Length: 342
Image 1 (cartoon, helix red, strand yellow):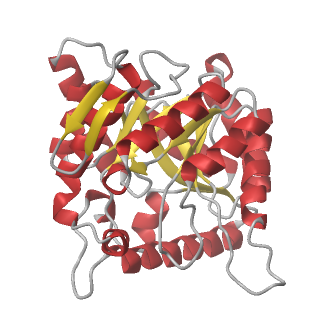
Image 2 (spheres, one colour):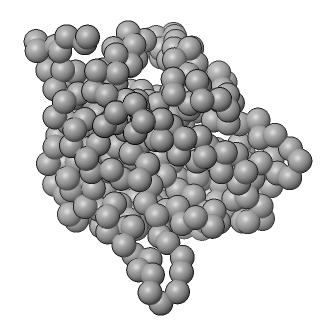
């Protein structure tokens, strides 16, 4: 199995006595430590207007991580294309790929939070069309060796050639966040890698992988389990009470997410929001507990065909990061030395 990171940093608001940059520096240090511990990648989210300081300028923060690391893959999970000028985004992403020596994994999505579409004054009904047009422009920007023009429904560019070139050819690996069957099939049709959200149950994860695998093979390609990254919240607990407290924090975060994601008086129907708001469902989808408890869940996930796990540490708990690397990871990255889970 392969293990990477998934998540965010926090820039706190406050008065002159609050260091708003502290959370960003802690995030960078966390990733430096992760690289040293053998983690493969970091995938950074993009969110806006939350009021609780989630990362908004993902590529800017990833540039800083790139400068402080040497081997860690640098992922976006995801850049929400309906909000971005696709040419400027292509330029910024190519710059990171070039400066990092070809370490960018470019994850894209359509977005799902009501407060963000509302804040940008972009109708959610336009998300699909804006996403598709922007993605086409970005790919052309990265692969065209000649100047080109684009006149679409939302974007117009005249006689342009996008610089700099990407280090990876023909472009950085593409990842797409998807949950509905049609969206998952579109990921396979495009030949991209699939990102599965951190709230999906075991059953839902299995269903999504089956849909993706079938569509990949239908098109004459071999399915590679490393083409699917499954995000999971994780926390290596000291004892049962510590685990219960962590689960309560996770439930609070999920309810806060539901609040910012839904329009007043309406339920958000995006696939990422389809999880059950119960303690049992939250515990099932998270890797919380002792190393043995976490290992049992990883065995279940591997039995579903999952080989690439993206771990969301929430509050950037360095102790969990190092304990997972020391006490859990070796049994799953080194097949001949499988641990006995008791």
